[in-house]
Length: 307
Image (tube, rainbow, N blue to C red; front, side):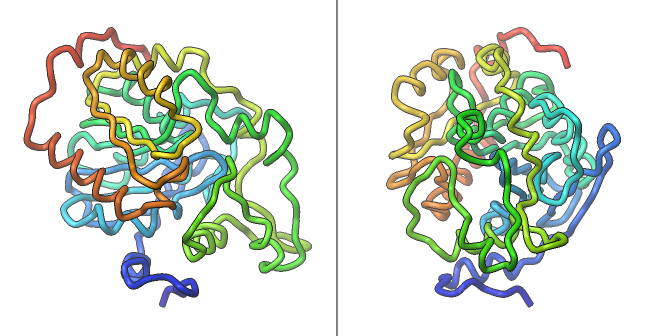
């Protein structure tokens, strides 16, 4: 039985009661861990977390997307329960994404849903592997800026030297959202924090590899977005400090004014934690529209970016 965080509402308890199937696939010599909800051999949705996060950021949302789909959440290398690498790039994470989708048994082109850093990975995948994708939903990932986690690490304020804490409760007390923002759902923070930690000699520490922030965002991310070869949708929080109206306008221009932009009310950057049910409803609506409509031809005019 899954322990339900104190104060969690019934919808949350129902979601985490759906225990996912664990999977691991080697990609370029590194084991990549993922979680799967729903039966294989179905159309698929692949969920990509942000920097320093992990697959369980999605585990209270995925069951609501898995009614008629195979839904997979990945621990990108250097995160969660996946292996580590000497060097991390968005291009390699995109390759991991495609390998996991195939290994999980997804039938046909999947839709990627990526938050923050995971949104940049989705953008790269949409350009490089777009002919093998049904779409990419980019969640509060500002093109023209580094992802917020990497910005924080570069400034030396977070992530560089993850501490070791003598007990689990001490470690949980140090959990923070990056970039900082208010949160009205302590049970969600408790859930993601507990899955962010691992026990080591001397106590508890964070699962992510600090080296993931030694990279910089690809300088050609704008070209990747311009070269997307599948449907793209942009979802952002009403109160996000990252995807501003100016950034939205620029991303819209890069996409040929051919992509939907969806704003989640009363949400900040971490909108899947702020307004989880509104976020699920938005993703469901986008996917339902894509299933029953055809994209405008202009969406396919961009040249392909070679892998």
